[in-house]
Every structure is written in C-alpha cells, then in structure tokens.
Image 1 (cartoon, rainbow, N blue to C red):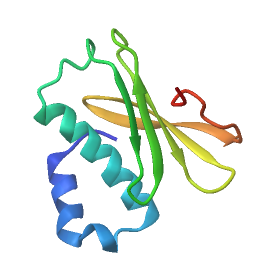
Image 2: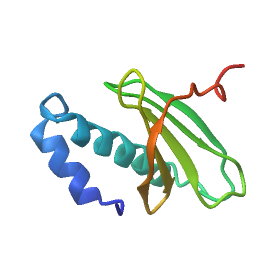
Image 3: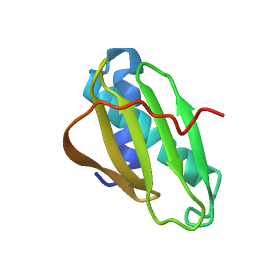
Image 4: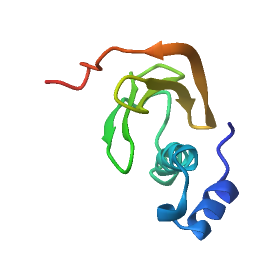
Length: 107
C-alpha cells in the first residue's frame, strides 16, 4: 500500500472512532509514515523503535542503514500481523500465523 495523504485525510473525516479494525490498522501505519515525512527524517539513516497502543498493540522497528522496517501488530491474543514499511508505504508479510512474543522491546 502506497502512502497517501489523501487516504489518511479520508479516514480522518470518517472519524478514528468509526474505523473498522482493518481501517484502524491502515490509519496507524499511514499516520506513522506521515510523522516520518513531517519530521523530515532521513529514512535510511534513521533508527526506529516505537511502541504504539492506540486501539491495536503495534511495534515499529528499523535499524539505521536499513531500507525497510518491520511492523508487528498484535491482531488478537495469538495472531500477529507483520508488515514491511518504508517512507513510501507498507506491505503485509503473509505468514500463516505468528504465535511468538516480541521481546525486542524489553530492556
């Protein structure tokens, strides 16, 4: 899915509270990419390690120098949806089901 400011604005007009779970996921990812643009980050040079808990438990991570980052979204108690993202958009990594715990954010 390509990043689109227009798509993000349409979702905002609908109201975040009125979004379906899939739309909320899309909104959260698009909004994160939007923050990268607004902060004028050099995406490749930047390192991201963010937790996001607005309706869905999500983790955004990327090492400096990498051209893609990963997003882990806890969809329900046992399933995790995994996405690759960059400053141009995102795409889901299709696996059957991820049933592991993300320990990369424990310090």
